[in-house]
Length: 179
Length: 163
Image (tube, rainbow over all chains, first blue to last red; front, side, top):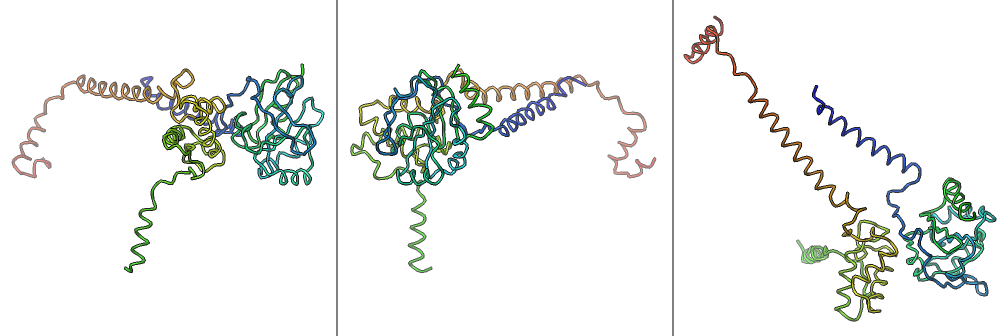
């Protein structure tokens, strides 16, 4: 038999291998609709956001210096955020400051949501127009950005955290940045 | 058909124009600048719907991006600068016409390479078949018996088969 007779089989195996690989990756949480972030390893964008609760501290870009920070964009109207919320509550004292950015939300809705579910955030600010969200490259809440002590974005979680992504991605990154 | 039904049919026929998602309250007062914003909006992909431009998409974020493009234009940005402003935040992914560079080589050249490969495969297949046909030995001459049967068939004599 000529060696080229096996070409169709070879092409099939390559395609099947590729499809199989993608299926496994999607099974591991790699969504094909996730857009790779261009903000990784760049300094966090300029922002100066007011607090959600009057009288509390707001947050500006300069406030990210000196500690590891997880910036979590969330909204009371966002259903995956509701699913993510209990996981965030379990993240206190894990070596980073948890900043909540209430994204395009009515303050009274956000406050009612937090009253009901609890407030896991160390700092809580509001981005009512969504401009800061766009500057970070947010295209769907929840999204979370892990920022190092120099104020650079190092890791992005698109969509809600799961127990697996916290163990596998977030906590190793936090450990690395706290070295 | 009643007159009302005719009017309804006419109305429906006219109402199938493509519906842009751009809302009246987003329009810029300067029609020229608005036209520029429309051109940019058609070239930017909505990161939420991913298969629509921000001009076509009803997503909230698409509206925010449309307004942002207009804000940049009003602030004096050129078309390229306004587009780059969005690309800086969302990456080349938001360009419906992606730029030609190393990471997009497969995207741009892949289809052409596949076409050329298919062309080469087809050409070599046809050539091999022709060569194969030419290389076949000439068919052997008919035997006496076969000649007789052929002659009988031409003569319209069915007996040729039975002989």
